[in-house]
Amino acid sequence: MSPEETVEQLPLGEGLVIGATAPAFSLPDADGNIHSLSNYSGQKLVIVFYRFGT
Image (cartoon, rainbow, N blue to C red; front, top):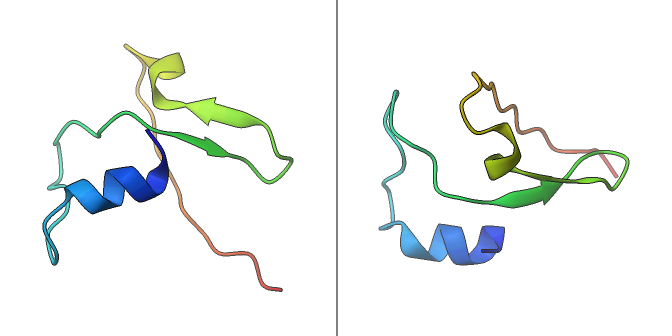
């Protein structure tokens, strides 16, 4: 599922609450490598989103 599809499934103004299960997603890192949430199943994971300045 793309990030856009994931966002479209959330009602406007709502998101995940602390401790909720995140939906499945895959995103590229700064080097272009794709990381899927499912690759980290059973592990503790901290996800940090930041915007690159261009």
